[in-house]
Image 1 (cartoon, rainbow, N blue to C red):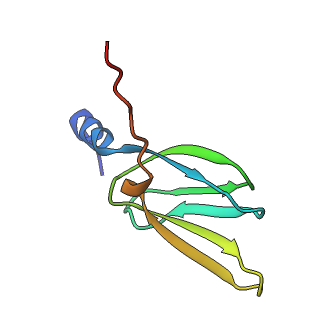
Image 2: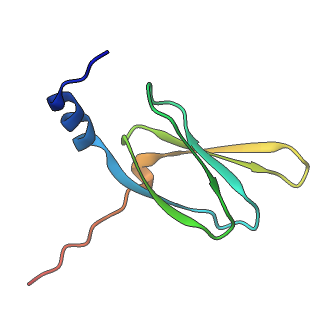
Amino acid sequence: MNLTTNEVISERDTRILCWYLNNTSKMQIARITNTPNWYFERTVFPGERFLFEAMPEAELEVWKNAETGAVVCDRILCDRLRVEELSTAD
């Protein structure tokens, strides 16, 4: 499938800047899997905060080991992780 320049630009314009903080003492795996033709996966260290771009309807899955040894997955809508810009009054 070939994308034209306009399609690439319009898709990029719909992305939002997001952030996530691992506030646990264990490593986590963060990934986005509900967006077609999109791959995002990252190891997140304890206390690490990172920025990423995603579509507003994308879900960030956060995988972590529980005390019982089970793997737990939390899903967070990326629109809730959006970086809010503060406007400065001149």
